[in-house]
Image: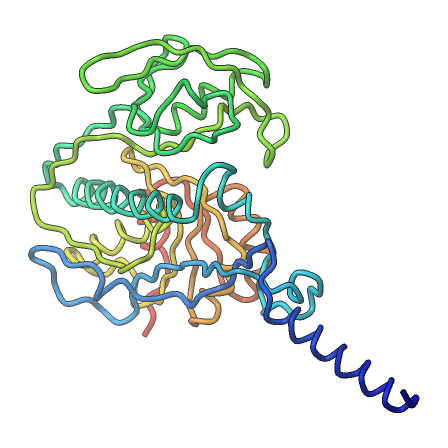
Length: 333
């Protein structure tokens, strides 16, 4: 073969290899920003009023498979993307289908909790009391595997009552990794005590965990109809946004005429819990020209400020604090 032909064949093979790397999926995933979206048309409340200009916006994160080339060359990833391994999204022994169903259940629960918190704020009599931490997932390689099952409810740790997921996290955190905790668990009408060894969290060195995912458990009865529909969006991180929009729909003037982007998991007692994907959510809020962005206080707020640019970040620890913070903002004209 002539040298020119050899060079030409090499170029063709290189182009084919490059094209394959661009098209072939890798074993990793990309977390991508998505634009913040208004909740006004997604939330329907009995007796709602016309809302003011502005609005409450929720922010989601797009997850897709990375190509092999995107995995190898960071400069080829879309702006604002983070590369994560598959096991960071789906624990070993699970599947994306199972994770998807779990996220949709979390979304349903977050909507109920948000409606209850918002209606209580407005003076409605809401029959909803936190009754424990509902187990929604157990990592197959964690100490809790084989000892706890989804749909069971944890009601105590070492004899101390657990009413919310935050109670559970706080009580387990009093231990050290490799300690044993005694969990009182309710299933149906019966309770039992389970001893589970803790391990160190792979994400937070030094923090003890038992390898479960939990949600708020409560029997919630709403006094008026509240319907929230985000289509196929899952997860609990829009809870705070839902509650703020319910108050906006019924009382008005929560947003002060501003475009208010919001993220944060909402507990039944009004507490705001941390969420994931903060970097992508901040970028999504910026791309939607939000005026302010409410995020859970602590590490979430610190991360949000790294990517906020000129977007004002408002850290909040509770639903009441979020309402007060918005009430102090100058009205947009």
